[in-house]
Length: 357
Image (cartoon, rainbow, N blue to C red; front, side):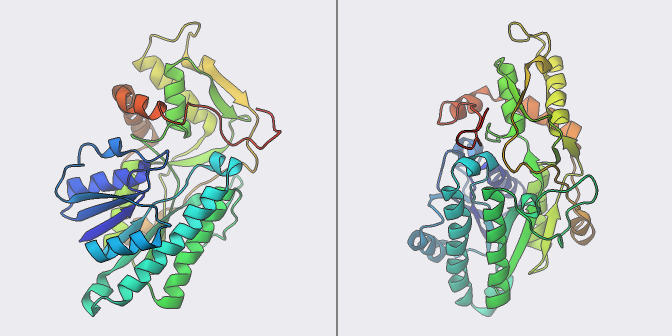
């Protein structure tokens, strides 16, 4: 198969591409605009592989997207390209509306026209897989789990833009018969994650003796999914999933933000006992800051459907996955330094103008 991966230089997209090149015989076309979070260093191990090709294209550019469909003749689209950080969406929603909604529309329209012109055999095997988030469902209380039938109730500009893109994909299936698949995942973590996200931010700040910011009391609960487990699940969906279906992908690892941060600190205490000056243990660096606007209390995925229907379940526990993640950041200082030399310098994002930090 020829597989398009949009957003393939991003955190999850690069994990998918590394899996596809290492464990399958498919040809992969990486389509990425290379915004601040796109990093081709994450694909340095496979970037010269004969089955890998990179195209630097904005998914909102319909002319160029149409040309690469004509050139490569894809069998599967795995659509991961998105602006994805909640805090950035609070301070600047326009990019999220443009990429996540308009970009998805452009991709759907180009794919629909391409698919409608295929012969019957290729038309029957074509797939458009839209990768989304559990944040579209809003916030849970202390009971229950998100299922594929949970009503959408997004809280942030980011989650609202992803909810809109999900609805577009379902509409293109119901209106035009496009062979689509959707997945909604819980919080991903693992190697190569951009350091504005909680886990890499805490690791890198701790090593530099910087404050470890915790929103409010740190009681927000997330279900954590190791990125390589997610990549395996996405491949299962494109090869075995039922057209028109949605699959929720979770790690079965509910943790409060405070638990996540204190666990990282304990791992670092063990692996890097030479603490920064004035610090006896890394948890001394924990700093509570004002909560961000519209911060959902709890997300938790019920992954029963993908387990029962596609025989997928995560390999990593939170403990094993987090240890691997910390080890990776400790052993990849050059990658981290190159990222930190760019526009993001570990500052807090997501403040509304006039709010306190």
